[in-house]
Amino acid sequence: MSKYPKVKNQELVGTYPAFVKSGGGYVWDEVLEYRVWCHPEDGAPDIDEEGDYYYFFDNYEEALQFSEDTQGAEPPLALILQEEYIGEPEPGKYIHVKEERLTEWPVDFLTRPRRTSSTIPDFFAPDAPANRIQILRGLH
Image 1 (spheres, rainbow, N blue to C red):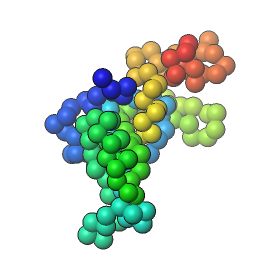
Image 2: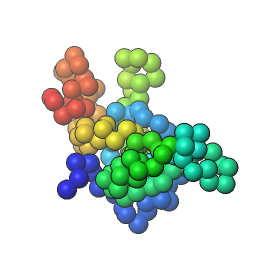
Image 3: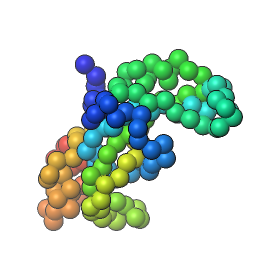
Image 4: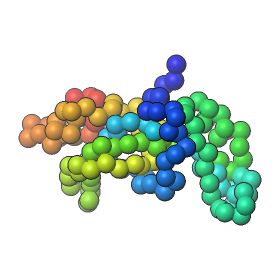
């Protein structure tokens, strides 16, 4: 049993675009794949002199093992789907963004609960706690 979520569809792992957003949005809906980025300048094999590249996995444990066994590899990242999310165009100013996006997240961010239909409305509610981030962490 993994401490991190399963991917949404194993058959689609490896079909997503390489270049997506990075971080942000505060909430997640689905994990699409786990990725391990490799850097030749840090000792990863130089594949066709094309620079950085990644391997994709359908579970965290295999991604972690590969990362630990491969010189020049980063720790795994999760490619997630956000069907809608919370933007922060400037520190402390939050907006509700109602559009889909793909983004890579540090895997530890997946310890936050998955977005529910009430997560974002609760975050923006007038009676939300002063530290609204507690809602995203499942603490309110």
